[in-house]
Length: 226
Ligand SMILES: *Cc1c(COP(=O)(O)O)cnc(C)c1O
Image 1 (tube, rainbow, N blue to C red):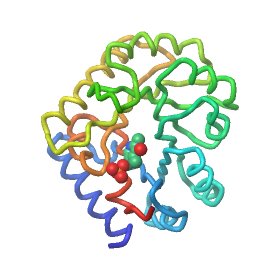
Image 2: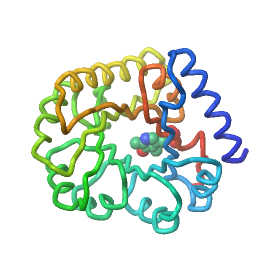
Image 3: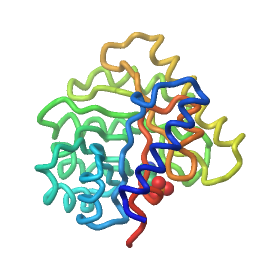
Image 4: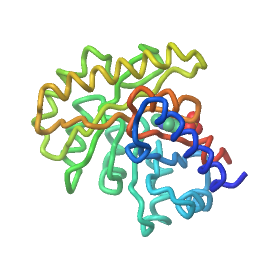
């Protein structure tokens, strides 16, 4: 199946989930995660109408960006970000989805040439293997980010456990959405927190039903070449 055909299917699924949740499909931004595919396949996605591109490693991002920077794309860094890699990433992306510690915020502040939109990553399921802040750390962390002039907290990001158990998935997404409401209630100018980055190939419909505004889809959209 071509990327274009897969995109058509995903749009259909997005639309179904929106219908269920009484939401407008225009409010869901689809990030094509291109980490497992070539530049050529990423270009195929762009030609099919994708405008958001996501990569989870600095070298992968640079490789895509070098060739595709002239396309009309918005670039997302979605993976764990080591502080020493910030300088390779921060001035070519529009969004960073994995802000989870003050040392990283400091490095972003130091290296960024303009304001950068960041998601604070939340480990809502408590899995050891997952990065991100525990839910009860999120509010104080976001308050602390006020000192950084280059960081705008546009939302919260999470990765759900890899499971088909709908209850677990829903609970994870609901935890993050409730936190988003708590952050919004603070009315912090540096943290409007209007977005939720959640939902991947196997769980994006549930994520949409639970409030996602950015979904990050790799395999189901562009496939897996390596
Ligand atoms: C790889 C990745 C995705 C996409 O995963 P798929 O299951 O292939 O859709 C989404 N978010 C993050 C943070 C990733 O690393």
